[in-house]
Image 1 (cartoon, rainbow, N blue to C red):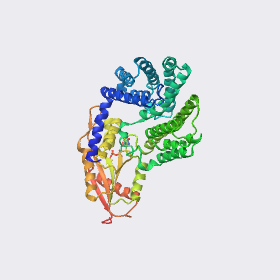
Image 2 (image 1 turned 45 degrees about the vertical axis):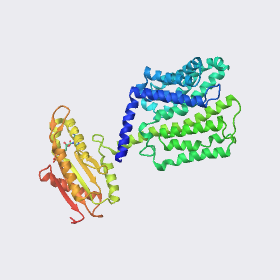
Image 3 (image 1 turned 135 degrees about the horizontal axis):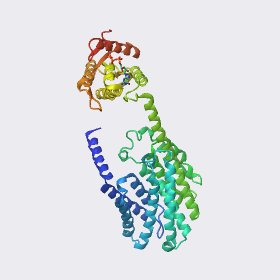
Image 4 (image 1 turned 90 degrees about the vertical axis):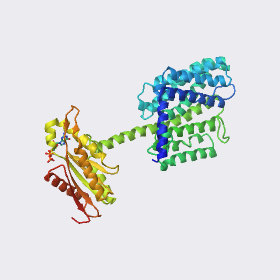
Amino acid sequence: MSEREAIEVSRGEVFLAWLRSEPGAVCLILLTVFLACLLGIYTRPVGFLASIWPANALLLGLLLRLPRAAKPLGWLAGAVAYMLADLLTGSSLFKAAILNFANLVSVGIGYAILARLPPEMIRLRRPASVFHLLTASAAAGAGAGLVGGFANPILFNSGVLSGWTFWFSTELVNHLAFLPVVLSVTPFQVGRLFDGPLLRRGDLLPAVVLFLSGFVAVLVGGPGAIAFPVPALLWCGLVYPVFPTAVMTLMFGIWAMAVISVGYIPSLAIPKGEMALVSIRLGASLIALAPIMLASVMQSRNELLGKLHDLATRDPLTGADNRRAFLESAQEMMLKGRLPLAVLMLDIDHFKAVNDHYGHAGGDAVLVEITRRTRDCLRTGDLFGRLGGEEFAIFVPDCSQTVALQVAERIRQEVARVPVALQDGRSVPVTTSIGMVLVTAAGVTGLDGLLAEADAALYLAKHNGRNRLETRILGVTGS
Ligand SMILES: Nc1nc2c(ncn2[C@@H]2O[C@H](COP(=O)(O)OP(=O)(O)OP(=O)(O)O)[C@@H](O)[C@H]2O)c(=O)[nH]1
């Protein structure tokens, strides 16, 4: 990371910390809800309710993601933003009060259902997340519909049932489109969408295919066109984490609404009648749930695979590579011929006495601390494994003889520098013996041979008095 990038990241962290504080979260709510209301107000048909109304889903999402804001002040900020947006754009106080009461009922119901779930579920990282999202969105829509439905004859001279249907479908559609984006976003990832584990540049293909299938749907038209992007959406759900998938499905939702509801693309079949429109909008929203569900399942599957991988490759006590993982990785590095390289064998001195004096738990604590001290002396690409008992191995690729000697000597000194402090207040003086083999030329010997050479050097270190390093060099001298 360059110096400039590091400054930007730290500025970003300061800003995020402020957003997570109560004043920051309240300001964010005020601004977001106000702007979202303006978007809804300026895109709605004259004299009627808005069908694009992201404000409720965004307020709900922010209250769930920023727990410091989910207090009376945060709710008040939301209510003020709703009222301000309506009053500043010419609504009467009476109309604004009723409509915004319905909005707050929607957010309140959604919050009551989702806030009691564990954070991982709320952030759409569990297979059942989408079920809860759907339940909360439908309940929020149904509740808001009750207020809005009964207000419909008074405000818009229209029926209670049609009012309820409109509120229900609008809330459901908007919640399913906007809520997943807010719930799944990890703020740090926003600015670095194509960096790190979130998305690699090579993974862009599903997004490109999604864009192309939307284009083809518009060209071909007809009642089936709405389904053209579905395979690409599912592909996105399989390949991308939840957040980018949610962004793609939001784009699909906007595309579907523009293409079908508003009729921007005349070659597509536009359904006649209010109910047909409601039905097709609900259908498009439910289609968009499938990729998010897939992404949630994949996320939890990947986490599980990660845990299984850790279980299979790590020593549970020290967290170092286990014997099998160490040998496999070392073998891979050997095949890549990353010379010169060094193989080190480490053995804690008189460890049996440590166990006898301080108990097995004391011995375990020493193993953990020695692992930490040793790892601190290594580079990221070096391998460090626990071969068994109190014996460890290190594989250092691409290192000169001088560097290898420095690394080994530093480890020996670090282990012995200060006694290991136990939880019960006692401290254990520890030393280690190290056998090292240096390889400077290819084809000298295989991994087993190197480990045997390092083991022989270790034996010599023990024999010559312990707490010392013995080295063998293979390749140059041919020894
Ligand atoms: N606490 C603890 N002890 C272990 C573990 N694995 C092996 N040991 C103990 O490590 C000790 C190894 O002792 P020895 O092989 O006799 O060697 P040493 O006492 O270290 O003597 P030298 O290697 O000759 O310096 C044995 O007492 C094992 O029971 C473990 O996971 N935890």
